[in-house]
Amino acid sequence: MIYTVTLNASLDYIVSVEDFRAGYTNRTVSEQIFPGGKGINVSLLLTELGFENVALGFIAGFTGDEIKKQVELRGCLQNFITLPHGLSRINVKLKSIDGTEINGRGPHIAKTDLQKLFSQLSRLKKGDVLVLAGSIPSSVPDSIYRDILEFLAEREVLTVVDATGDLLINVLAYHPFLIKPNIHELGELFDTVLTSRKQAIPYARKLQAMGAQNVLVSLAGAGAVLVDAHGTVHESCAPKGMLKNGVGAGDSMVAGFLAGWLEQENYRYAFRMGLAAGSASAFSETMATRSEIKNVLQQLEEIAQRRKTP
Image (cartoon, rainbow, N blue to C red; front, side):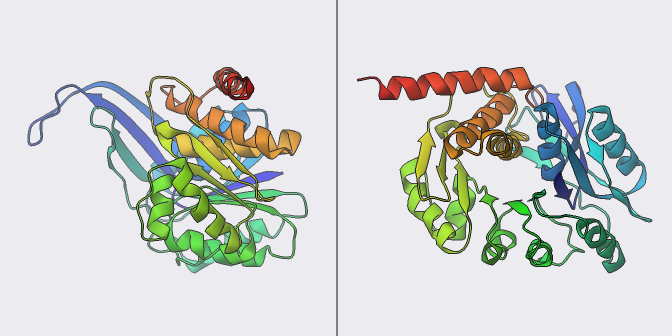
């Protein structure tokens, strides 16, 4: 079974405002509400691709109830832990001004709550898959991802970590199957600025030397790079399409890669599935559908064929 963990689940309130003016009353021209959090996004896209999985994590209050409802309506299994106090966060994302968002803090998670999560994780066994993705609330120790991988170290669970900074660095000693920094996050890890696929490769190899098995680097409109567990480099430019929604594109890439790997156990195919899923979600108003992903995958296959043709 595949499990995802979202420690700071949210309702994402995505709005468009024409001619936004600070200090004035602005009215929306469109609005959407989705269950959010990187792990939940991975779960939803895996479900769309036909891979049964269970979304784990914490919810609280009426917003938590809505997250649970929306996840289930989309056909995804869940086993969220309901906290006794507080509210799951609401993240406001303003589509009219690219990259502008206001993210909530999320509820307090006590040690006893974390013990419940570890009790759930104690049921994982050889062959299961665990995805740890996203930021963590301030009430949770910043060693949490490392602690989870240490807890599972002898169980032969396939682990995926999509995180930044120390959250990511701290897990490398436990050899996660996949990590997925974007190009900016990769540069920040090594206190440098990276702008191209070629520049990303040596730093991806450094993360491998530190313990990661596969390093997938997303570069938005410039495509992606994978340095796989065999040391082979896979890279591609991004397929053509109109950017409509950057929310969840990176999470879709993680889900697509994982789906591709579980389907064929082939890194080349998994890489293209990841890039196709991430790009398809970026080209869609919502998370991509299976047919949209397959269409973009076909485009990537055609790009690869043209490269081989003299």
